[in-house]
Length: 159
Ligand SMILES: Nc1nc2c(c(=O)[nH]1)N[C@H]1C(S)=C(S)[C@@H](COP(=O)(O)O)O[C@H]1N2
Ligand SMILES: [Mo]
Image 1: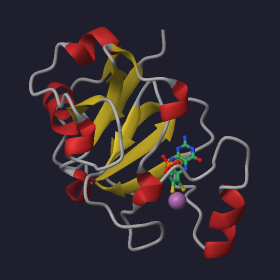
Image 2: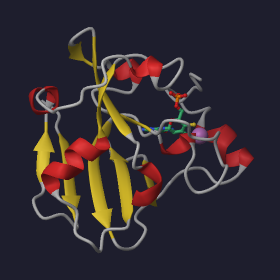
Image 3: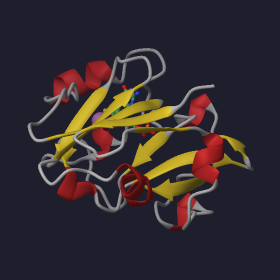
Image 4: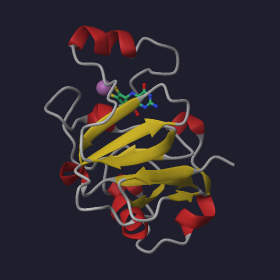
């Protein structure tokens, strides 16, 4: 079963599966209450970070898809409120919703507005890496490359 790995500049790297996430405190039962239009249940990024314990040097968080094709790296400070959707009707979040693990930043601005934007809502999340320097970031940087990005199969804008 796919797991979500958290590593890099942390005291104790860990991998989380559905069961481990289900046991975390402070579950968000209905993501739509936090992010209109989005479905499922989630855990807070903070709950995961509490378990892996980031080092003081960790200032960036890199969110990478399981297939390694997509990656976004943003200041850790800016995604304190980040959540990971992983459950829908009490089973694993389906792939068509970006599952089994999908990152969401509440109240985030649209694509390409500043360093933290909706493009950093990484689907099929497989690895979270904390670091001092900014990590790999393949988010499209121009309106044109963004348009092309969403033209690829499976990357239609869903909202
Ligand atoms: N794994 C993965 N996650 C991704 C992308 C992607 O291509 N692959 N595209 C990003 C971009 S550019 C945007 S705008 C949002 C779109 O999410 P949505 O389709 O749920 O609206 O997903 C982000 N997460
Ligand atoms: Mo985007």
